[in-house]
Picture 1 (cartoon, helix red, strand yellow):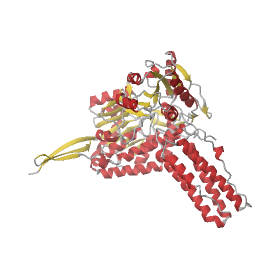
Picture 2 (picture 1 turned 90 degrees about the vertical axis):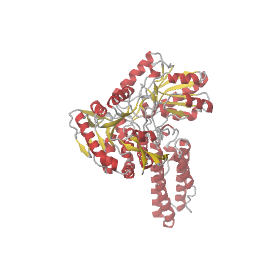
Picture 3 (picture 1 turned 90 degrees about the horizontal axis):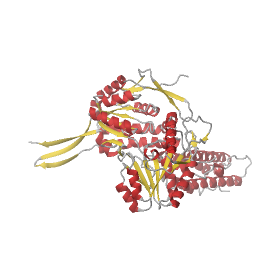
Picture 4 (picture 1 turned 180 degrees about the vertical axis):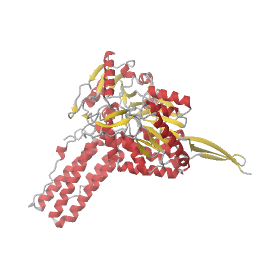
Length: 487
Length: 140
């Protein structure tokens, strides 16, 4: 049977790519070929931007409430296809079916919140700024925006931006990750069902050529991105040169601090989920477990953590008994293995060795790793500093909270940090002092909610306004001040 | 079979509610004098299943913690028979029904305990369903 080739969606039509370069999309759990993704050429991106630019005047003049109704219809279609959407994510990414359902739910939440645009896009006014003169601020859309999407949340991440952008009256283009493009393909089938005017949303599959096109095209008003720090920095610089707005959410090395009074038994499920959920491939994943306290406290925490990590069942995410799926591709696994080797060379102790595979079912091993836990990790080691993006936890120690915060500040990333404690003073100090875009108190994953802005600090974020919430509405609009007097 | 993920728990809920509903439907054909009660329970079982699924799909998130919470749930502990012999007396059916309801109730209460604090709506619904089953008694 011929392998399905994904198409681009441009100007309301599904079209074959003109490229002869395709990437095979492989189910990482089973090794089966799912489809081929075209690596589209810049000319295809140009034609999508042109369609979006042509659709923009009519779309921005469509009343906000009418734009929101398209989103209401999208929510209905997504709910009707909830399971199918989730299955696609598991097959192309490897995450468990529950994790995919969670991703689907979060994606839908974005559309729900964006559909409140008739309220959230409102401006403000003041009568009589001078005698008989009034002033008001209105928010207006800007034109064409794009999203360069990552592989780790292939369905949800573009929804951090797309529904808000079009709700504000902009038009939009998605370039899915060429490692996991199927979820976006499915989403665009639904956007097609909803009947948006041609050109309002566009999908161009591809790699660096399409991404560069987004950064360079003169009609592109802004670029949103989620991915690694080097690429985020490049996008930020490039868009600075071409005068575009940017939200570039980047890498992470998140700390979870365990204070001596933490309710460790209650915290364990949260910790395990944070470190090993999505096989550690998320920018909010716990990476460094930083234990504060004496040897007894340390041993108690680490023994329980290792025991829980060792008990995680690993296999095909569609198997409901599986708690952790594979990493997304074989290259990822090799990269993670190299980083583990480097950690060993630097003197860390591999207490739980996830290289020794224990899988549920007879599966190809190319993309699988079981959870790993390193002890004796010190702040200068690569294990403590570099983003691994896999199911590998590094355990560090600190004598007190001040030292813990200093250690956290020693890494270049600042996406998320969490503390587990019952002490309000410590929690308050942590929240106040720690440099991180997202802070958790007795919460393992500081989840991005649709109605709050989400973004990191330092090398974890490049831009000014964050994604989601009020920030993203401002990002996708320009404020205009009007001062009126009537004679 | 061990139930260690939310998805597995949901599939088990579907199975037990479907099995129990089918059991009551079969009973209703054999005992016409109890038909209304039995069919109302069958209908209620399907509503429970729907409510659980709707709640699960409504509250599940990408920060899933419940995937690691269900330690110690085993389907073997909640197995019940649903086959009805043609010469069964009403008292046998009543006993079988009661045994089944106790097993299902026990499952929901244990699952509620294990998911406590993770997805608040789920344990609340599990407890509500367990409570609603308390008054199910086939009069002999």
